[in-house]
Amino acid sequence: MRPVLKELKENLNKLKRRGYLKPTIKKYEEKVDKLIKEGIADSEAHARILVLDYLTEIMRESQGEVEKIIEEKLKRGLISDPSQTRVAVAGSNFQGLVAYALIQNVLSGNIPGVIIALRPKQSKYREVLERYTLIMVGDEYQKPDVDILMFDPTIEEKPVIIYSCKTSLRERAGQTYKWKLLYEMATTKCKYIVQSDECPIKRYKISFNGKRKVLVGFITADFYNELNSPQLRGMLSFFDFSYVSKPHTDAPNTKKLSEIVGDLNKIFR
Image (cartoon, rainbow, N blue to C red; front, side):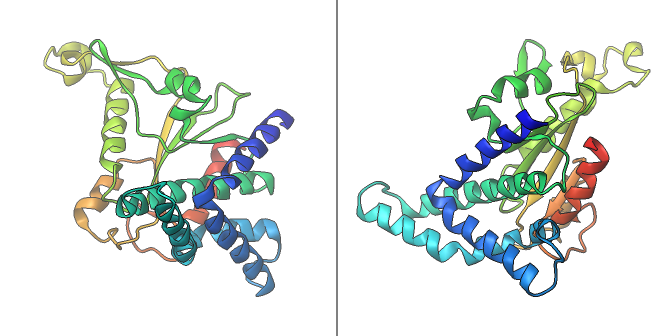
């Protein structure tokens, strides 16, 4: 447990050093304090759970301070296209905020001691990701779109969880659910595969050699209230988990983000 906590704290400190994310983290911590002071949460640990349903609100409240950073970098010539930067920063900040909030829940004892890694393809966790998620299609391999990787490094029997975290459903959720479909095909136990050469699994030579089960989740800030779109809602049905970081949702197949704590305890506890 101690090596995991040490690694989590290192990951947390990396998030705290991200310039664009600092105003958002500040708003997050202010919201945690407010939930306690107003008696909505009875402890800091409880507040760390409840605040998950306010990440969309926190993103919006921190937007003004983030914009100041963008404007300052524009004046200094560090960026040339502020519009493109705003879009990139919003997506990156949401991913970072979700990772930060989940790590805080582990450190508060709400979630078991698991590794939570942001953008694992660009970190030392790349090897872990490739070991457990590569799907072969013929001689080529397919990787999932992963914003957050979660796994227990000590127990091979526990699954690996990958999350795609998007500010809206217009972003690359489609890429993730297509990988999920490939994964379902590659791991199916359907008894009819051997009986037909026309089976897509055989035709495209789809295979998976990962030693752990992979669960796929989608987390959205739903900035544009897209969860009521039938087409986009249907896409979410392919995921093992779908969450929205708002205090209320009536969308089918989608839970409030605070419910992720209970789900993770069922998996890892």
